[in-house]
Amino acid sequence: MVSVVILGAGNVATHLFKAFSNTNQAVVIQWYNRNLNALKSYKTSVEITDDLSQLKEADLYILAVSDDAIKPLSSLLPFENRLVAHTSGSVSLYDIDKKHKRGVFYPLQSFSKSADINFADVPVCIEALKSDDYHVLKNLAIAIGSPTKKVNSDQRKVLHLAAVFVNNFTNQLYRIAHEITESEGAEFDVLKPLILETAKKVQDLSPYMAQTGPAKRNDKKTLRKHLKLLKDPHHKDIYNLLTSSIQRTHGRKKL
Amino acid sequence: MVSVVILGAGNVATHLFKAFSNTNQAVVIQWYNRNLNALKSYKTSVEITDDLSQLKEADLYILAVSDDAIKPLSSLLPFENRLVAHTSGSVSLYDIDKKHKRGVFYPLQSFSKSADINFADVPVCIEALKSDDYHVLKNLAIAIGSPTKKVNSDQRKVLHLAAVFVNNFTNQLYRIAHEITESEGAEFDVLKPLILETAKKVQDLSPYMAQTGPAKRNDKKTLRKHLKLLKDPHHKDIYNLLTSSIQRTHGRKKL
Image 1 (cartoon, one colour):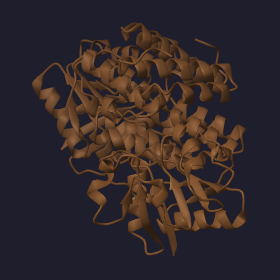
Image 2: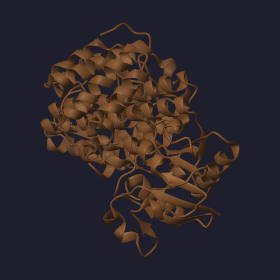
Image 3: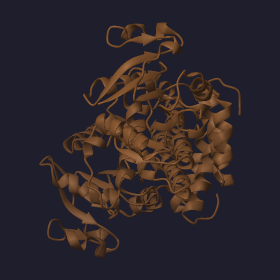
């Protein structure tokens, strides 16, 4: 049983609080936030505080706060030599004040406020300087049902960057598809099974092997038709750039 | 019961043959291909031919051939006034020779040779000039369990273009994520749950509502960190272009 204090009240903090509350291998003994209002609805299930001097002793302090707040908040903690882990993809382990035992507990998933999350679908990337600390973090991840991955700071930063490509940028391609279809009175809904199948395909196959389409085939007639259909010059730019990216990957000539 | 002759031996033709064979509301009475070798393994389950003059009378002829072959093949068919439909996303209905009753039966999905396909996940976009023909095509799609959509040629072309964004381009973003992670010894596998979640999220939520991340937040510090991490100038170009696309969509200033 590991005792945890959570600091922060955003999506990650809230989802972690719920996950920790659902396992008997962890107990959240306190939840801190600078603004206590954000925690009010939880005050019957956990002790809440906005006062760092009132923080209880715990096995682990999780800093689920914005990237910029990690360093200053870790310095302000009125104790030392306890395990303090942040949850950020892009902040160094060494941004945590060196008076602490330092760790990272980075859940690699897209968290929304509303949607429930199944932590079996959330790989937790773990980093720590000492083996004991690593195992505290790893066991906690296992307790909430997450796959775990030992990841150093460089690897974590690169995973965070890659996550922007497969999540934010991919979602923007969905958005553009939405704009294109609606502009002709076609329905974006018709594309939803294809969106899902595209994501499913690379669960077993490499993206390299999964690629198909006019860019890979260098089907110039279709490429020309598509560019003619695109009215927004920014959409044309994206079409051209991603087409030539595919052709570079698959050894075709540029568009 | 609708009798069908399939023309062509590619992925779409093969998957349609299997789907039609699994319903008692359709029967494939003949399968044509220019090169008979490609059909040899099916000769015990269906009559195969490479001779257009031997084509039997059927309710429907499906031209599941390459885009460029649709027009000439439809002219070569030695009959008239029968229903002939192609399966292409980007070819006009009017490319089919006007001596026929013309239709389009476009399954909007990514077909691989190997993977089995569930036609419940394949919306079929249907176009026809006459109501009777439309219903033949629609009932056939329903018979194989597909959702159907009445789509005119302009809408179909735009859906085909949008499919390139959500399938080929998205897959290329997965590929870049693969390159980035492997270059640092991180594992692409860790991203797979996020890839799936990103696709699932827009099944219920619009891509606009689903967007998150540093570009949308205009989190300049993270954007700078990411650009610094990217070594390949082409990856940087894609990062910049899709970041500014997100910021245009969400009313942020350009990078």
